[in-house]
Image 1 (cartoon, rainbow, N blue to C red):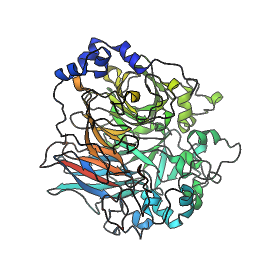
Image 2 (cartoon, one colour):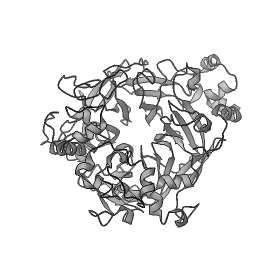
Image 3 (cartoon, rainbow, N blue to C red):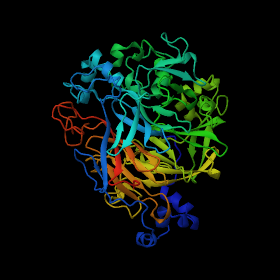
Length: 628
């Protein structure tokens, strides 16, 4: 990235842009830049809109929530979903059983009400990846190559069945929420489920394989991270780190070599290619092009075929959260979760219709764009359209399909801003402002700092706020500023920028996913906090975005050691907060192996003979009422 132009520091940009308008809207960073003391800001600050007692930061084997709230397990890896599903037995696993049970490493969680009261609904959950060394006995977590070599065909089949996603009906009763086992809506999607490829890249020769001469049907979805729920009640699920699954090597000089390198192929983490030729690059070089898409699933019809919507581009998708433009088109915000990758936006050609079926193919037609963040706090969406701005045959893009299959290369061709791991991107339904979670980038050098990525290296991440021009998500231009630079504010070398009202428990690092409650308040989930990095576990923090307390964070929930916090989602009445606890038991920073025999925690069952189990939990206020 040495060709990136020098740029002023973020503080210089803030000082340049400071005005009375900034102070009136409550930007604490702007106030500090103008010499206003934190005490003066605090004296005029309104009471926090968050009324929960702040949780103490820390790390241990348990899940903790703020006083006055309670957490109940809703779904654990292996829990039966169908009436004929076997009871979970970690030492007697089978692919057939796992296909009827809740999958592994739950990430995105979406709730779709089934009745006006919101007391019944469908929970849609991504199962991102598997930790074989935590799932099966006898594997050495420290020896990745050894794990890959030791796995049996039956164990690989279990892994493939544990990927994908789950649709589960849940109901709220006096004792709390419970899954409806055997509901007619129940569905498991796995790495073997038939899925259609649709949109501009469908049927292209680069998607054709011997098993699928049409280039329009692929088996499975893998490494599905975050996602979104559309206004017409479908579930969008983003495929992320697909490179981990492909072994072997492309033949010398193969035309897909550059594409494979751009997607990181060659960093094998799974044994699948030992038993399934479609994951062996030497045998099926086009198979990776069939992954890395956003998948649309109809949770109301378990017999429907999911669709990979190629119009939304191929890269390492973190999420696919949406909003509507002022003229009614659907807008999907997308992050490519890798260092120096980009922020994207898809705008449908058609408008969202009231009749549900009329939106069935809405996401097959529209314009995918990539963001350029200018130093003066403005920005522009650059359309990724074949034939424009060098996206043509002379530069290796013979069609729109090529642009979408190699979205990363197309984005760089247009001069998009390389970001610090863009993960979840969500629009506030109340204000229309959009929040970009940038997790970290320790590979950014000091001389690569720029206003939108103001620290090099960036160990703790930051959050950018985008204001679409005219409050229109379909606008070509926007304004932006950094909401917070994450990390410990007490350490000057970190250059964190939380509000001075944030306590020692309130700051965090590595923002990952986010959501908004019904009052438009921002809640952030993290990935990467631990004893060494921050002295605290991952969890949920509530962050204020308005008024004199803007940039103030408050700690609400923390996960067990080794786990990541995922999938924050509220019910429409704000009385339940669903969160996903992913990969509990992974190695912590004090030497735990993170294996089946010696996990860093055995949460949630705490049985000496059982491994830790990724789970979705429901958080509610003790005695009832709205969260927060």
